Length: 160
Figure (spheres, rainbow, N blue to C red):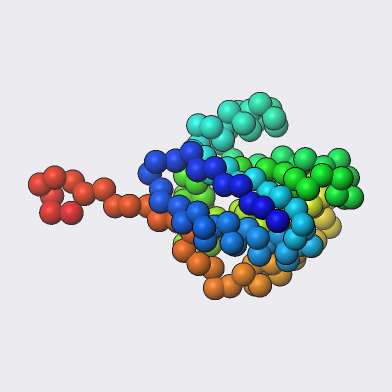
């Protein structure tokens, strides 16, 4: 099992080793312990370009998943790529009353489940099935460790 992590952000401190270990735990939980996974943490601009290019939607989104396998049978060790927009995750966490780490963990699980063939857009029944699986995997990950922090910017002369 290998997890490749690419952080393309400067305003967020990511605990890369902790995020990798969490991703490994998710892979084990979904029966993909022999698989390789790539995680890309990006900003809204990059995510918007990817969403436009691959989904023809000219707006940012929280997570995209790019499967490397055509079917459920593992021909390749590489399961796929999960791309997460951290600024979108920050906004969603704030709106939902969750920590950034909880939001990132959910987006990671959501993306990996897409790589495993789950698709909440296919039908209401599939959306319910995917949500139940997400909840079960997330329960097994608790407590969610701190995955990332946003440093406070001090302003000269304001005492902050």
